[in-house]
Length: 217
Image (cartoon, rainbow, N blue to C red):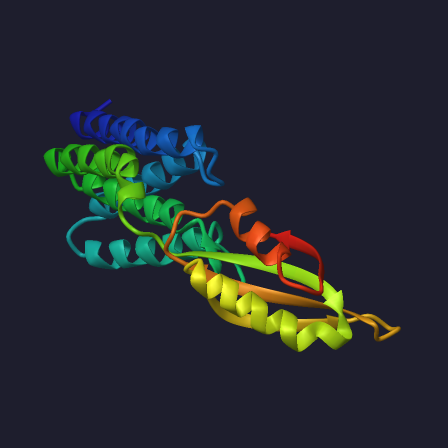
């Protein structure tokens, strides 16, 4: 085994360790991309950069970096889930992109930058998460109310009035009628910056005349 091969192996091991550190944080929080995914992304990026360097100066490492970033972009998009106005998985997708960059740095031998970046990334994922609740956060919710068809206009007006008083903004509305035509359901999509407990707004809406049932999501 040559000295260069030994250095390459050590770089791959470091990629496993640093990628695993970020992946472990995602794993313990039950995210869709966990320990193995982050290790493999970081390891693969480091391997590509090592192989690129072994081909000699005629191979542009910038092209390898561009290929890695493009490929990881498709992988990160796979963990993002969008349901109406609610988007999940953005942080995990960013972590996948981040460990790919770590692998590139390790493959290039930039150990101090890789170690420092890992430490900063873990601080962002762990310590800053404890203070996230201090910053007002926009959240989206869906409420469905049922009542008689004849009371539909009054029910909608009452819901909008009560929700506005509670700090909710109606960003979408759909109506569903039954075949008999005597019952209807309003589905309101809401946006708010306040801390939400579904029982409180449901109690306010239940006081509106004509509402038979309420479902809060």
